[in-house]
Length: 130
Length: 136
Image (cartoon, rainbow over all chains, first blue to last red; front, side):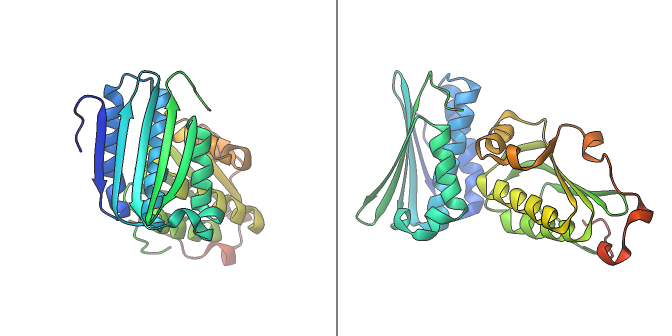
């Protein structure tokens, strides 16, 4: 993970056991962004769900980038494998994870680009969705 | 549940016969989901009251919330009680609330509330109770 300026980057192995360390890294970065706890928690939960989806249904490599702009925090989770279109993702608990993401942050985009699946989370700093 | 190996950061108490309190500390996610699912399924199957205490948990993800909700439904189907104890870290409260679980589950904020109306030993069918012992 690197946290130079306002950029966060992390590469995760495709192992659920890596999620805890990822959350610790992301939480530390969010802490330094000076956003309030409620916003940090919402972003952390949504980013965790996106990464968990990628680990459960996608394939390596899996990377996460975060960026802070004046009014918005952006998180992008990129993984190999076209898991977003998988019927199970939309019907089972992972589908609930996607619904949760949409409730937690201002905007969620799930994009299929070739063999890649990209989840983009956008959180307006002043907006509390829940 | 005899000799059950508990998942990391999970403690099991049996305050009385037919009553189980399973306490979750620390972080729980996809990595421990299957073990927690098995534990709760067994406890619901063997007890008349199960309290799932997340009051000292520091992180829970959707996969765990799904397991907890399924346990609540299983208890209802069986005619037993399943309670969720919170009063916890804001991020844990947030996921239970955002997922709608608080609307579905019997939620309490103290152990005393969690154990109210706990069945007395002589009210219980030994056939239902199994041979439960604290795991670990």
